Image 1 (cartoon, rainbow, N blue to C red):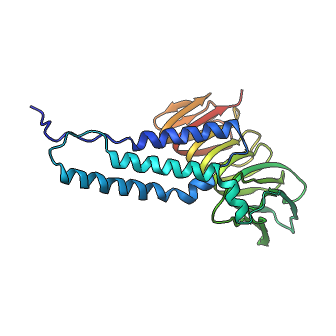
Image 2 (spheres, rainbow, N blue to C red):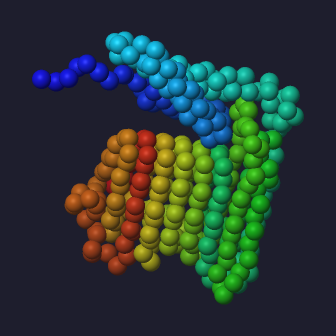
Image 3 (cartoon, helix red, strand yellow):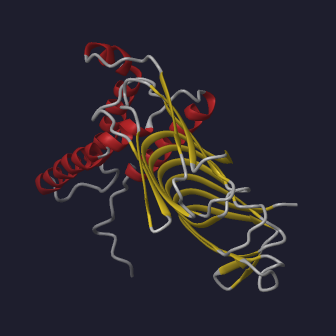
Length: 314
């Protein structure tokens, strides 16, 4: 006979966290200027603090009333609700606090051109805390970069040097420790169509619009903390491509070619995986051209909370 003398307490922590994340995504879709991710990245340890204090309270109450009927973990629930309240205050009252700290909402605009300087191929590393990243291929140089940002961010730094025919492009940016109000940070990067490229992207939060149709990309490493990324890997390719895309919270939309072989491994933590034009074989997804075309795209996509969409072009 089951022992019901010590029933488990019900925790509402995970449902409240999921509801809060869902609400933030909805507000972000309705108001594109709304950027909650930088505040979340700065203040997420408060979740641990509030829940820890709540568990101390729950344990104290159980020690005082060992015979009490188990129910909802009151302390943990109050703790996560307290975090939500603090988060709302930071998001909605942040603009006035930003003014008192001297942050400016004015948008700055800078641009920079990187010449080949004899490079036959390139490696690029992008480090972006939060914002919107757009990548395309219509430059006559190694790179044409356009940046728009407000006072929450410093001007991005572009470093370039050539060694043994390989151009190394490094783009990084400092941001203020605390972001209040609606921040703006947009990078528009255009690479050359003839320069083979290895690209590594470290992005904390935001949106990525990455169009590699006309870029001779040979390797892609993309790490996105929270947000949405749209990646276009269609187009003709003369060499194999290895792509590793990792997202924490959000959605990854990957557009794949029909005439070039594709083998993809996709896994998600809490979320779903949708495919179009691919067939599943074991733990991998392949298209009809896999094993038949002279070049192959090797793709690995990992998601935390959200959705992974693999869509083959018509």
